[in-house]
Image 1 (cartoon, rainbow, N blue to C red):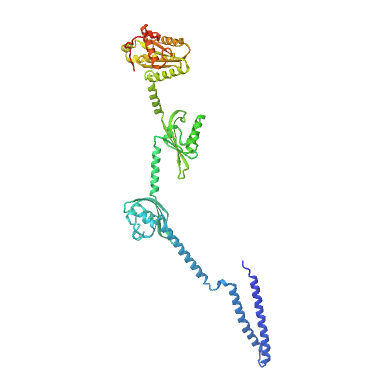
Image 2 (image 1 turned 180 degrees about the horizontal axis):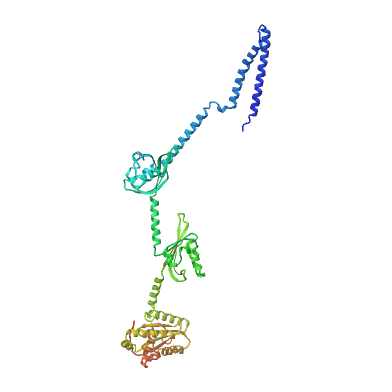
Length: 520
């Protein structure tokens, strides 16, 4: 705030000084007039006139100069109303210039029209969207009657905004005269005068083609995932579950209410092994790798199943993980079929015993172990007596029942580490590893003979075996020699009247008769 006290005091002092000087001059004037013009009737009149002539002009000049020095900024200044009017005009011009720049350079299309639909403003983005050659050509059309604008709904939206005075939003396809199809999103707003009356409408057009395409793709992908035969789970980068598809519910039994919002670790919290499995999985995918495994898992109801699981990290544009996608496929049936195929590759389909291939593998392993540890082992070759007559008399189905019954009896007699195999037809072989005395093997043979003396089928059929035995290393140091000598010992048992066992003796070798009868 200005301090006006000092200037006012100075002004008063100067006025007093001027007054005193004027009075002094007038007093001198009065004295002169009175002595020089003694004939003047009333010299006081001259005194007053002199005072006015000397004092008032000087005082007026002084006050004017004081006023100019106190307000120098007011010198040569125009009237305040004129100043306000000029500033307002300049501000309006600047505002209009800024608006024109915004409209001309806006990436969105901007179009305005009056109450009759005549276009008053159109920017380059609008011309590009509508495929119009120029602003002049576009301004010659009427938005309410121009066919393409009417057909796509743009005209209707602009007109509705005029009629209702409200903002109207619409999405539509517009086809240019060159056949290009553009998906647009449009916002229409009425324009008002200073009095508030609606004088026109403005439309802002946005090219939504890319967004629409992306939305359609997302809908397609969502439909695919929802109807996928593979279970899908999506989580954020912290493992928080955000989505599961219907197949996941079908596979695991967990519903969206059970898992969404929870961490994936809840699915692996049933035991220590599962928790360790999850930690390995988590470590792998957090480093940006894809985890693929066939694993055994448990449904919500506790039922076990085999799954083929794939966990993939999803990276953003900066290479950072922001989601994980889990794909699960129930492979229980496929795995069972695979296991069955493996089983059948090494097992007899009728009896479930080891087949010829598996027997040879185990025989070679047993011979190698015996050689390594300087131990003994035995091979037994068993053939059923009179089996051909059973097949011929009762049929192959009954023969198959007999073979299965014999297999069960052999499995009950043999030890856990022994091998029982069906070589084909009515021939069976046995491996007895790691025994201390030959008598131990003979006891096994006697148990087999005893177990087959009872009826084996509903028809109370009885069969007897002939068993030949060969020992490592006495009768051979490789699997071919051992199996061959056990076969020859079996023929020695046949020759001795059947239903007995014989240990291989080289001097009793005989030619094998044609005895093979195979059942499958």
